[in-house]
Length: 82
Image (tube, rainbow, N blue to C red):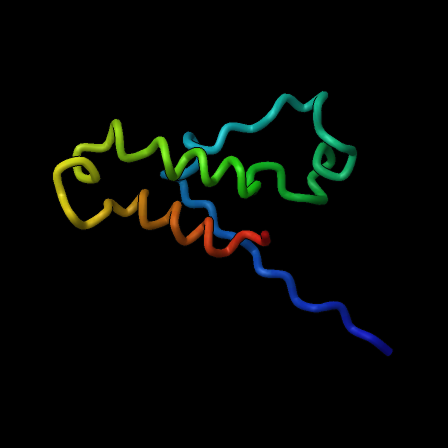
């Protein structure tokens, strides 16, 4: 009997939700449209949000320590499969 490897679930906090827009429902494959696969957590979407975030965020612009949203985006990028 073989077992499938455990999959890591990326955590998306409420602060990240506006930064990761959902694609139109009619453009999704069936598995994503019915919720069997993650729709948000694509590496591309997370990378775009990570790159775009510092501009409008005062803490990320003026402080050397990234804000909690920036830290969460980095964690998400590290958790997502390549």
